[in-house]
Image 1 (cartoon, one colour):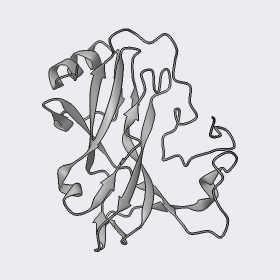
Image 2: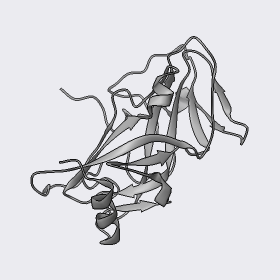
Image 3: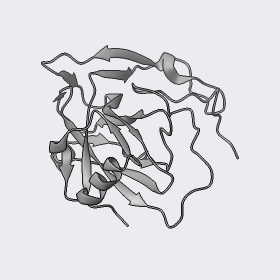
Length: 187
């Protein structure tokens, strides 16, 4: 069941769901809008490969602060951004990210596959959400910091989960690159 804005507000008031950096104007009928922070990681081309069993990819990215006048993504650019908001989900809610249609309509692809936020994400340590962003258009696209960037829908699980999310992507306030040296691909 997808929570309505009224149900999201109830969970916030009861302290079961935490959204640090909360803005009342970010509610939509059945979602909450997350904003893009002013720090991004731009993926740069390298001569070495990314090994999904051993590479910490942070060296493949260049850290950039988005100025108030915005940052231009060239066609094909891939960046990691983060939500301004930090979240902590209870054991009975998961999150699902989806991009705003205005960005989709110009070819800006956001969270094209990593759109799931596990129950207990940010438990005891509210964490930002990392966004995967790619300019799929044939034009430059200027993005701005602290603007509404994507929806998060909250979905109630049928039962409370028994285990907690303790992945390496929780506990951060900025975008986090993949680290296969800590979390290698498994078969």
